[in-house]
Image 1: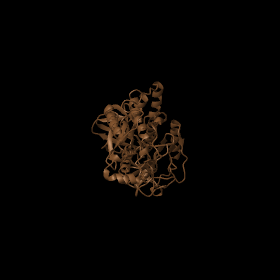
Image 2: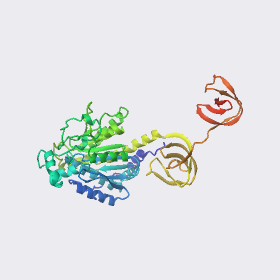
Image 3: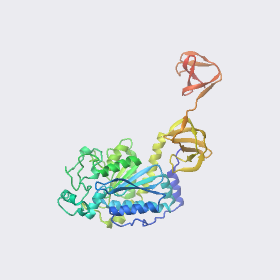
Image 4: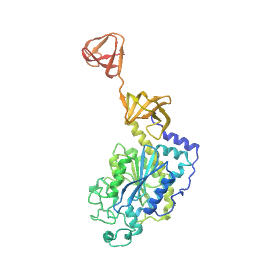
Length: 455
């Protein structure tokens, strides 16, 4: 096996070390309604508390200039992506995701399984996609420029209570903005409104542009887009036949973990959602859990937090494990088996797998070394530690010259077929091979290119 079997090692670690579920209470407080300002404060605090495991970055700004924050947990090459609060009134999802981030970090200090997993995988989180919309729901129109308040009120039918609001603060539904059968989205009000308006074109909003660009940047193996409410999971949007069995299997696993009902695929689903777009574009799994029991056109109340946290606490672990498996299988399928020689001009790190976090804590001194397989800038080489991988950004590669040793007078054929016409005989020698098929070799002679059979 050429890629380290992480899943097997995780199972062994889990058997050796019993779970200890630490309370997610260092920075993130479990039961609270998250505002944009609180998200910003806590994410900055988490980065300071876990500098070796966390990266915090801004991936864009909302229509009203609020930062869209993304935070990573882990060090591995394969990635998974969790997002929440595409819809303004669904900010309950932000509280769940913030606790997931804290829980992973806390458990990484005490649980070998989690620590090992985060050495091999990176989980990215955007806990509040629609910061403007959430702010409008929580604080009302007074949180926005006075010049815009009349227009915002008009999009809410003149009502000052914005608790039903789903769109961004410009009246565009962010989960109807992605280019996935966008033209055929159903129930579109045709104007900027508190909910369901798909916009005049896909990716019209700054929020959607930021999320799409970021997705391409991190190239996740799986995604989780949290919404509310209903305790169901959407998982299918014209999934390709080549991956439907895989995606169905994973959806059933997620349903078992959360206790949510899997939604039955329909022949003509309404598109435009993040998961819809990801499934169509990447042909990888994307899931949309609807948290909590149905709350109608209102935010989910915090009295449902304990139950929903219990259902979703283990989801990031499951997501990371399966992201690694998908990445491993994808990379393995792309590995090219070909002998080449690589000239190393400096000390080169050795890895157990094609994952820069999977270091073998050793190096190869400058030399010329043979590789038996490669993918991208990774090369499989034989070392004193056994078969390992090296990563060489600017390798000087030489494909070794193949030769065949002829020990007796050998027939030369026009084609690689024993009963074909013989063009002549080749005397004993060592000769360069152009190409091979079975025990036949094409070689260049005074008669031109011919085939010889060396048994």
